[in-house]
Length: 116
Length: 111
Image (cartoon, rainbow over all chains, first blue to last red; front, top):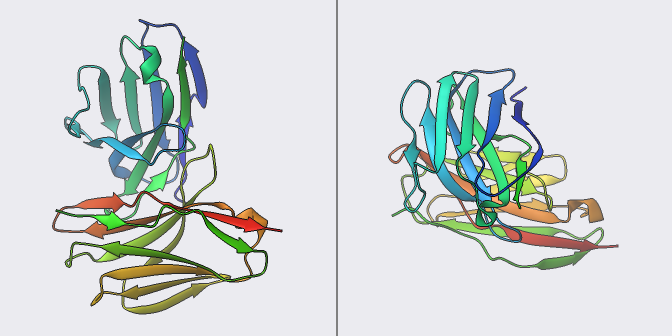
């Protein structure tokens, strides 16, 4: 149980284009989903927290107009990187907390984004 | 302010030895404690959770919690090269309603 999927697993895009990453909880309802970014050999960095049906809460320093998050249902959240630049190349990982278990987070497999 | 501290390592142990990973946290009101394992290039995987003082064992893994000392540890017995990964300590506080991660300790198990 507690499986989270992400799609795509990797993506290459050109500078200036937008990329959408999907995060789905497959066997549970996720009241809260989280988006992280991780650069090589660095620790996880929380970007934003989203609750179903409400606006995401972004961490300090994360541009909300650049990283658009939509948590449309209890099983789906999307992250759109708008006007991507090479410095946005990173490993993006989502996680989800099951309804009634806010202290637990289950991670998706991650999406590796390369902007050329 | 909530902080979770881990030694970045690497912690090097020979195959078959016991690996001991440590974590301290600042929020005395923290209630739930987790250990995640992250292989290079992969996402974190939950391997242990502990909620009350004492030890919790699961196979080769033992989590230890001491709330008075604000200290949580993970012991890996009979370490295998496949255990080589970064281990993340995570602490949940209902007061903040967030799970705070440490930066992780890299474990290297040599054959």
